[in-house]
Image 1: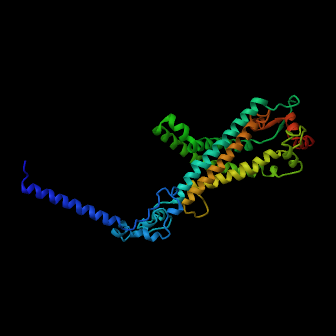
Image 2: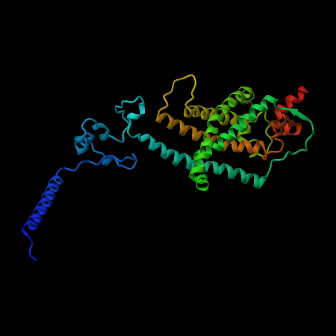
Image 3: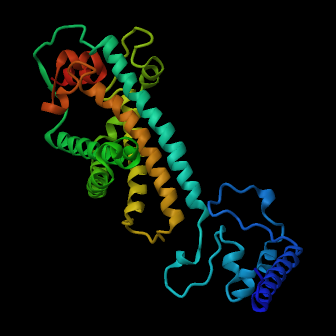
Length: 353
């Protein structure tokens, strides 16, 4: 079948067009290759792949077609402030590299090692209780009760204790909940649950801080290191030596918890929490992304360490030692308990009596 002249001409025109397009592509391909743009993640690009002269990236077609804003495309993964017409100071940074670094530290170092620390503390205490049980008094209770704490002392302590438990639970849900609670509850239910936890956490924080300050003022005088504290610390209250070590109103273990656990870590958690809540009083702070990320890392790390220490404190003060909880329940302790665990304080009270 013969083709008409028009069909042959049409075929020749199409072939000529394709040939010209191919020739144009080959000529463009002969140009020097443009250096690759930095990765958007900011962590998976090697320094060797970054050009020595970043301004060379502006020679690409994107910079040629949009000459008014080449800097945004030259360094999309850096932190310099670019011009924006809105008052938000952070909007000028297209991609903040520190955000990726913070995410790696939070989800890698803090959650992994912090989780192991909490697990070791919990199962260590459970193992001690399983093997040894509660520490019993060596002599029977005398029935003679000695006043140890006032009603106000106990009120402040229990406010601090319950606010800490609320903060610890909600904080652990915020930090670790997505790994075990979200798969069980589902995304929608977990999101609503986490919002409740967040509000409880934010509103309970200032109450916890206030209770720490009041408790510190009430008991700072009784937590000053004194004679015999070093020996108690070296032998851990006679646990290692097997010999009884006298202690004052508080032993050195309780003083360490007071100064490092409650005061230092508690106030560090409170200060970083105030930054995260953006309610820092008496000073001006710019709540930028970098500030919030640093505060979050400090807050999480200190909270995990305090929670691990608090497990030991709660254990000793409740089921770990006979009679320990009586002082905070009723304000009074048995004379046998006072003599065995706080002999120096007991002798002073006995002389006054």
